Amino acid sequence: MELPSITIKLIIYLQNLTAIIFSSNRTIMSQLDPTDVEILKLLQKNALLTNKEISIKLFKSIATIYERIRRLTENGYILRTVAILDRKKINRGLIAFSQVLLNDHAASTLLQFETEVAKFPEVMECFQMTGNFDFLLRIATADMDSYHDFYRNKLANLPNITTVQSFFVLSETKSDTSYPL
Image 1 (tube, rainbow, N blue to C red):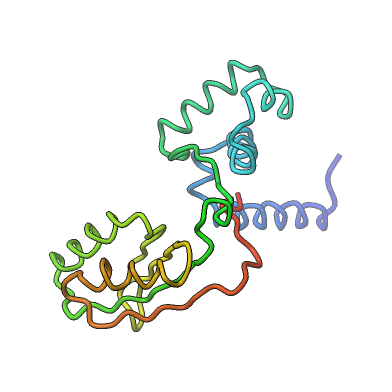
Image 2 (image 1 turned 180 degrees about the vertical axis):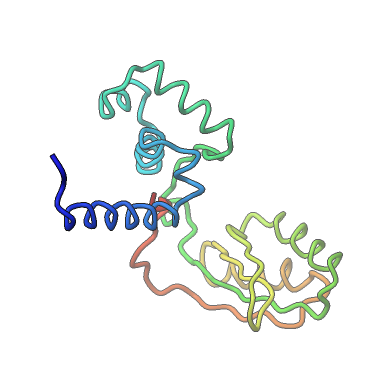
């Protein structure tokens, strides 16, 4: 039985559409199968899930889940497993985003800044940026006095800083640690 021409065209169209969709996620799709992706989604939401709980959700054996998580960790998909704390309950109620401009952009200057700023426990994240500033820092302190102390006695003492412009969080609408997969 021969398929009508329109059906063949529709099949070809759907195949091409599928190829386009999956090519945008080529890296993930070429190295991770659907089970790996589901494991990562579950662990991003709750890293305390046991292998048994994951195996039940995904209809796989516990041994399979164990091996896949081991492989995902070994291959660098899972970098570490952490607990996300309520910052207010641990006295880190003030969040600042500080833009830092350096006066020199030599590789050694950038590396020196990154090395030194990474030592400060108040600095939760440090990103090198494009645009008008060189780095964006997310800083967590107890309050404005603690931030002032951090700024004055730590950040401002680093060499090669031209400008620091800080913005303080008034409220947090969304804070998610899960990447969409």
